Length: 186
Image (tube, rainbow, N blue to C red; front, side, top):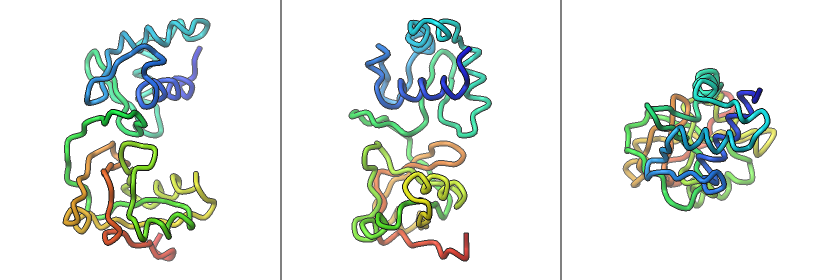
């Protein structure tokens, strides 16, 4: 049996990064038919031959991070896309403050240039400092936590999009909307 973690990684790879390897197509909002994804996963053979919709539903329901969404006969990744064609998102109103964890050396660049999506389609922002720290630890053992003033960012031209309960997305964030969280506040 394929574990939920293995399934999540495979589904993320298919829906966020290289759908062509799975011979699936995503629409402009990132949706693909569930049966096409299952067929692609089942074609791996072995343990993958038994992956079904119930396995997808269980993987989504038990995930610690909400990465995927099922809607009727279709499925999509909510964020994290590295595809060249932009996955269209509907603008949304974010909380007053969002957070972003980064490496100390990266903060110097962000202070001058703002946040950019780098190899992703959108900048990923967290709703709380704990999530931002967890993300920032991927880059540094002692990450810098940035605070995004969303009103200032919106005034500077940033558009925000809902990713899930813990993640918000933005095209870019101007440096004037970003400050460093005082380490005593976290």
